[in-house]
Image 1: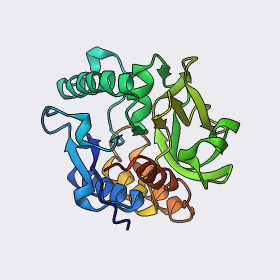
Image 2: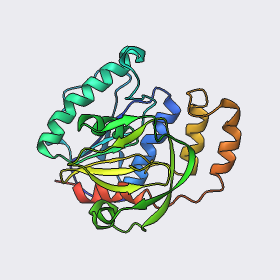
Image 3: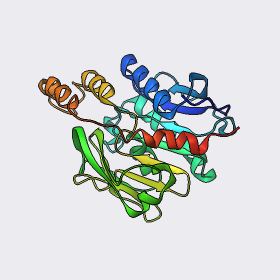
Length: 249
């Protein structure tokens, strides 16, 4: 673990399941290389977003979420609508300042939607390991420093970017999802794959969300068994690079 003396990072989470939420937090701590006091967590599904002064933080991370941003507004719960509105308001400031931001999976539905991307269910991917390939821009981007041009990552998402806005930079794709990572301005990033997920994490998510519509519930055990056979080791570099690049005193 790193021992930087820095302003903390802020993790905005929205998982109602305590086990999944807590394991997600521990994964970010581990793979960012941060101590608990260096990563403050706010669970948006539990209470309204408190007042956030960006000057207090080194960067903002948005974790994954069971929310699907492209669903019709009438089908969303009051909690989801509140969370989306709060994140949009915070992103107004983050984007205006080009403040360090990393959205993982749900980052596509937050930063992408905020920036005018077309987001729908055209390129959803099944739960499991997917080969991700960096673009030429991705190879050069510092947040992907040390990454091979092709690597395995865990995914599982209902929606994805169909069309990026012209000002966004495509950093990574897969054969079944053309936008797996992008950058806006210099310091704003979103991934479709999960950089925090290792085998333990994916198995936990499959168990927690077996009735959430990502896959037929009867396939849960099969998906867990398949996850145990996949070596996912590279995506976590994204988190360590993000923390290393933006840690500030």
